[in-house]
Length: 109
Image (tube, rainbow, N blue to C red):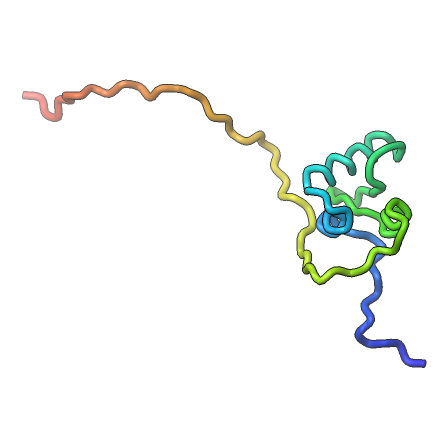
């Protein structure tokens, strides 16, 4: 029996975008639950592993969580991890700009 060439092997790990799609949750909630799992040593949150700076979700653990196999969707995800930033985003302030002279002297005599 020949293997079906159109059959794609199921990946053992899932990206954040794939887990978001399967569980129908947003990015913030998915990362929050992944960090909770890592911080609690697996006691709470979404089962995942760290691979370098990336977070990956084990397919079998997510399937056990939802109680059924994960079927591929037609959604094409090329998303991996969010961009890494080291600085906090700037915050807006209500600073006023310095007042400027409304009648500046351009030339001196």
